[in-house]
Image 1 (cartoon, rainbow, N blue to C red):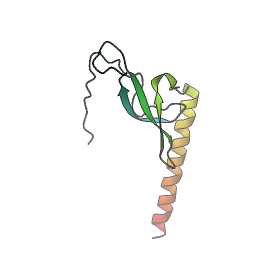
Image 2: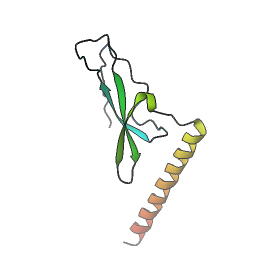
Image 3: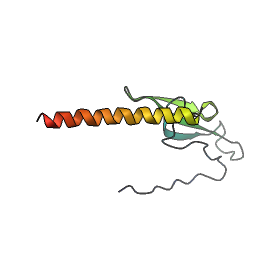
Image 4: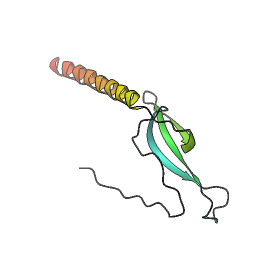
Length: 103
C-alpha cells in the first residue's frame, strides 16, 4: 500500500507548474528542486524550479531542466506515448510468460 506524502512549500516560493511522473517532450519528470537566487536572506526574491527529467530509461539518463524550458506533450503525443508504453509492457509480459512455460 502506498502512503501519502505531504510536501510543504514556503509561502515565499512559487508553486511548481509540473508534477512528478508527468510526461514532457524532454522525458518523464522524476524529481523537482527549488533553486534560490544568490541572496538567501531575501524571501521577496523568487527562485526557480528545476526538474529532473528521465530522458532515456534505457541508460537512466537524467537531465536537469529549468521550469521555463519544460514543454508538455500535446494530447495526441501523450496518447501515442502511453500506447507505446502499453505495447512495450505487453510484449515484456508475453516474453515472461513464454519463459515460464519453458521452465
